Image (cartoon, rainbow, N blue to C red; front, side):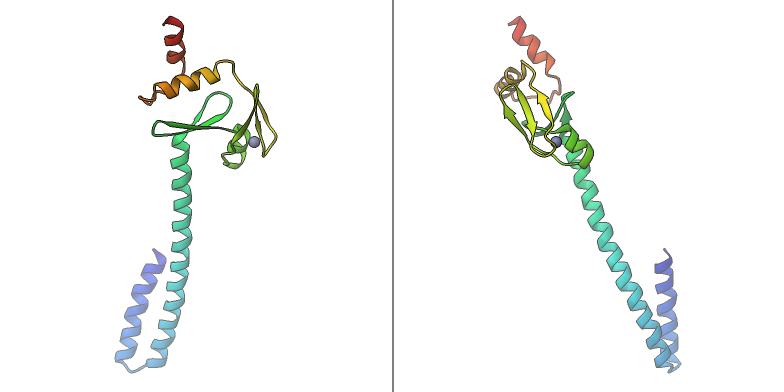
Length: 147
Ligand SMILES: [Zn+2]
């Protein structure tokens, strides 16, 4: 706001000074306006970069689901992961967990996650029925028990 006003009044003054033939004074004003302009451009670029970063974080946050233990990335009907809860919460990093028989391990923080007994079954059921964006895993489980 301040810089816009400053430029508006500055340009007007520079024009007036030119009309009066006071070119060196007008030149000094234009020079300071240029400095101001470059500073605003720099600030604008920084804000744009910041905005993109925030948008990416928000976009990601919408796709990340917590299963009570670790994170999954859900894009359209594809579920990727799992990812380390500690690394995401602490550093905003999605670190793939490595499968080790009955547990998952984070290669970054060395965190261990016990694998629920029915996790593999649930994943298989999800792959078999990819439609719907339901976040619930319980109905699938019940469906299996009843059927
Ligand atoms: Zn981790």
